[in-house]
Image (cartoon, rainbow, N blue to C red; front, side, top):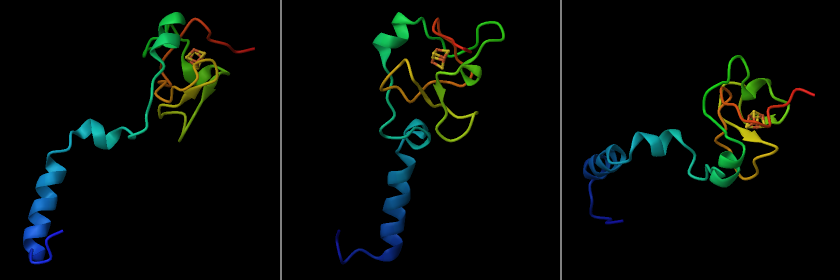
Length: 93
Ligand code: SF4
């Protein structure tokens, strides 16, 4: 950091740097991951199938709450499972 930089100049540079960050980078955790191979194998979709959805599946692992994207016990390494999603492994037993 340039120690000669005024506070106003630093704030202006910081606000311009923030404006350059895509909104998706802010709303999505930096370490968010998907498991494309397992998603494809299980025909995962981001929307429900009829009334069946991940939030009602025993394999769903909520991260924050039931409305936020979370994990799935049968799709390891994926924390972007939609609570409104569905796949062929949907399970209530
Ligand atoms: Fe969703 Fe399928 Fe995981 Fe159940 S098994 S939470 S339906 S992705």
